[in-house]
Amino acid sequence: MPHDTPLIATIVAGLGLAFVFGALANRFRIPPLVGYLVAGVLVGPNTPGFVADAGLANELAEIGVILLMFGVGLHFSLKDLLSVRAIAVPGAIVQIGFATALGAGLAWMLGWSMGAGLVFGLALSVASTVVLLRALQERRMIETERGRIAVGWLIVEDLAMVLALVLLPALAGVLGGQEQVDTHASGLLSLPASYGIWGVVGITLAKVAAFVVVMLVVGRRVIPWILHYVAHTGSRELFRLAVLAIALGVAFGAAKLFGVSLALGAFFAGMIMSESELSHRAAEESLPLRDAFSVLFFVSVGMLFDPFSLISNGWPILATLAIIVIGKSLAAFLIVVAFGYPLATALMISASLAQIGEFSFILAELGVGLKLLPEQGRDLILAGAILSIVLNPLMFLAIDWMKPWLERRAARTAPPAEAKPVGPATEPGHVASVAATTKAEDGPPPRTTLTDHAILIGYGRVGSLVGASLKEAALPFLVVEDADKTLARLKADGIETVSGNAANAEVFAAANPEGAKRLILAIPNAFEAGQIVLRARAANPGINVIARAHSDAEVEHLKGLGADTVIMGEREIARGIVEEVLGHKPGAAA
Image (cartoon, rainbow, N blue to C red; front, side, top):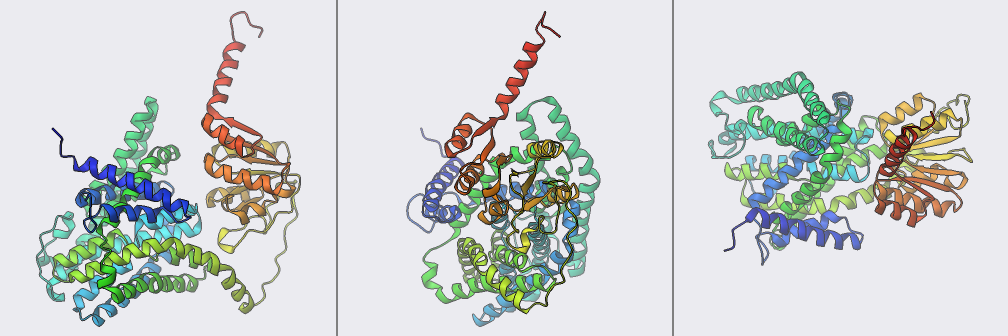
């Protein structure tokens, strides 16, 4: 007798179709997330055939948001967050205000009430956590200055939306809706209106502050202690379980006890865990689940979309999309430029925010439940979310196309800069000149003057050991790296660097592969390493390529692409153990 298993059916259908359509999208050089959205539309209630459980899909998607924000927190620190507060706080507030005003204007043109305009505008003002973070991860920007600004901006938007979700029920009567609403949201949304507006705001801020204090005082001690205790058991399974339990437990507890969003709670859990030396291992262990559940997020968004609404609400959908993609982007661009940041940073931030997602859906549902927002408004928000998510990768392609033109235009209008003297060089390969260490925000990095040098890709646990040996041997080399903290440390050590992802053609060309003697790939990503090997072989067929791998399949993959030597960690460990054992046999010479 068959069992009714909606959870299994939803996961199988969601991941299965996402794989099929994601692979097709990738085949036609379209971002895979477009395929995930199409998969969601096909299993949604607005298309014939199998219909997945929308409620379960939304909860699975929420797990994806939690794990994704937790992963971002692992690469963040409180110092990083505070370092961008001067731009993130005013920038997010001004951008939210501008987008809300545009949304309210469209609502007025459609004949809606003031309350409807406020909810509609707020829903269009906040970017999707998942889409923004996936875009940053694909471009390896989370640890750059631009990435920190974008994440800080996102956190401010998150806090603003938490406050909006609290205040809307209290203000519903004044705005033309109904004062009471039966909701299954967190305890914060059920704060009685009798407290008054300022009372509700005060309680909300007090709960958020209490959560931050608990995480900084208690979490800073408890979370690292748990990780170290579990790590000493030697069980990888228990360690992985501990990481997931902390991420999900803190997020759920933060929402239920303090009323902050699940995403914000997970972010703080990751940020506290980042202070432990085990944070890199925690990030690696949680990565597969983060990827799987973020795919389910896009599937769940696709399930909400009614393709026929494109016909029935044609021009309002186009106007909504214009506010999200053009209005928000323009506001963010002008704000970032006004704060004196480079054009590349302003363009990246504006493209990152040119979409809406999960918070927009929550606001829309709350607005309809409070009788503030008409159902047409919810349909426009859903359509705007789907279309803006589909168009978001094209926005990044557009800024890549626009950036050189804008920079040339800015250079023509800017006053000539004073020439800065460059300090004397030290040893070969250890030059830390102004031209050598260039921020990715300032455009393509300048080409190195080194020749017959080694190019070291990545300066993590493996790369730093290799680099130290090269420096000790006085061999000329440079490092290609994209993590700001690592770049700063390399600059302080007098090691020449090229800032950026070596898989990028402009970044790799700056390392002068044509004149290099050796390429050392110390990054753990075999797919990305393979792209770099191909690029190196095309530029310099005689270059000696040394790479690392984690499996026999990766060894064969990299050797097939042209690597001369591929070293597998496990094999070298085994060789070292065998040498140690055979070298200390009974009766062996000392």
